[in-house]
Length: 129
Image (cartoon, rainbow, N blue to C red; front, side, top):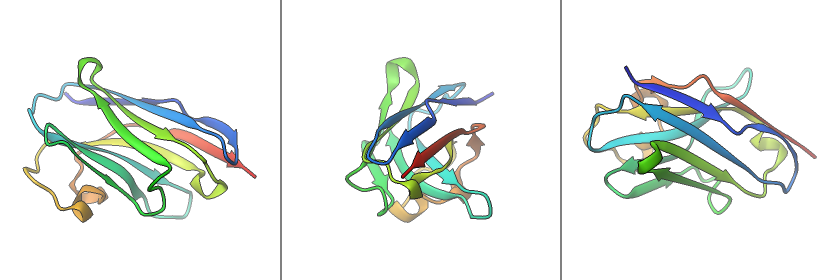
């Protein structure tokens, strides 16, 4: 049973930083994808950043390139999202997800919600101007 538990959300002012964490358990695949997604009420869930664990590639949405960094600590089975220079438009519920079925994804697929088969409950990020 795969479980994903996010933490680290909160409220910050524009220009501030937060680091989200996602503790993963139950993943037995040697290579798989993990990602961060976000959703605001009334909007579709969108991919923010993802990483091919075991494959060494990362993927970012254009809106966060240069500001967000995704990383994985294999020893702790934890996924991170370092978010710098946060802006009000980054306000959303942030979700961690895992895709344990796909062998290889394109960059577009790696940021797409449809390929991910496990999801966490989310952590709220609020950025005020």
